[in-house]
Length: 239
Length: 300
Ligand SMILES: Nc1ncnc2c1ncn2[C@@H]1O[C@H](COP(=O)(O)OP(=O)(O)OP(=O)(O)O)[C@@H](O)[C@H]1O
Ligand SMILES: [Mg+2]
Image 1 (cartoon, rainbow over the protein chains, first blue to last red):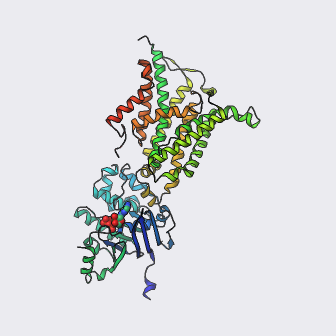
Image 2: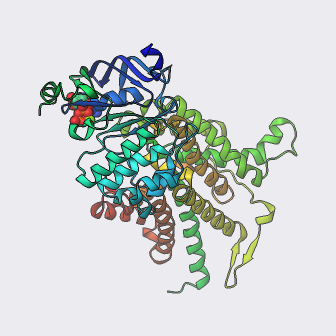
Image 3: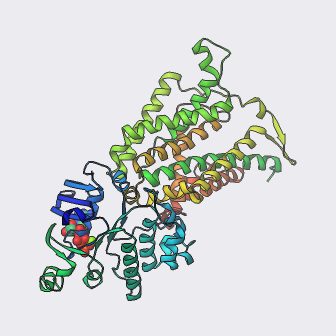
């Protein structure tokens, strides 16, 4: 009975392996994300969390295994076709285009599905961006760049958001604002995969945590188990 | 100085026309380099091919087909020839250049250089090395009185048309949505593809566009230059110097540098004719010493 009531799986990897050139980085990652869930990928530096997101999107040099997005097997598809199945990507380095203005960055991404947010809604969520509309991306502060990197994927109609280290190096007020943004997105039904270093930030937002270690999933911990398994998490994260 | 104002202005006009060609060609090179990371040594051969195709269309095609009175006039050529040259370019991109993107610049340079030699050799084999002439269209024949002097109508047309094309290209690149995609693709193509843009197709079309600029320049050049298989290679030497001075990858930079260097060349012809063929290269050497990335280039 329980199975039937659960929302469908919208993103799944099975035995996902990935390589950069000759170096074999992922050795079989299995994750399952249901519609509307917020799931984290935790782990130490170099564990393979960023690579997991890149391998899902087809951005690594080579990959093998199974990746399904909204039921479609994407392992043989080029990145632009994978994205069009409903993925929105916010990369670790933020990927703001320096030679484009804030406005151009915000309106650049193609619409991949109906239901993308109007620009006004994005600006309501991140008011700072409105003030910087005509500034070039290269001149924005770290926080502004992060808001822009998140805001622009909301316009596309993507319903599965892959967010990589969005709090990295940002001031506490901005981290709080991003936390509120994630909560709001969750309440609006977005599916979110959050790569995080900051466990304190992630633990109150996520429904489930995966701990990545040496290119594999080392543990899967539901939100309600976190308190009981805190020691294990701390050990795996090396804190 | 015994030079009349008339002669001075005539030299300046010639310089300006040269500058227009430098600007159009170096813009195409800059656009291609930005997105493909390849220095397109075929550019000169593509320019030459366009001039030849225009000439073939006007003087050869009818007799070949058995209708001596049939000819593709200048205006039609100005539209069709750049499209044909671009189409051939896109085939080259798909079949050859595509395989080199992961490698060092040097390989792209060698390949495009080789393709240029093949194209030049082909035209030399078919048409020989002596120059062919091309009559300007009737509408643009004869002189035009600009007030203080007479200028050939066709030359005025070339300057106006080139400036429009340069400005249009700049506007497209810097002020439109399409241009935003091109700039984004130049900065980070991989990420752009992860957002759902078909970057490989975009690259092919961009190469076609850059080559089409060389094609337009080639048709515009047909009535004022000797049409020979080597016309593009010779011009390209100077255009590469222009690109080095302006900085690869800057659209506005190539436009401004191209026009100014044409004018400087024209002025040198007036004041110190012996130096007119080397002045561009002297400037290039000086710029390289002071600003290796070029006047408008971004440091990388
Ligand atoms: N472009 C690359 N080329 C070669 N190796 C890479 C590349 N990117 C990452 N790696 C290697 O792959 C492994 C996993 O890196 P990844 O970026 O996925 O880690 P991560 O979990 O995101 O950690 P963090 O972001 O905290 O550094 C690391 O050992 C890293 O050195
Ligand atoms: Mg990472």
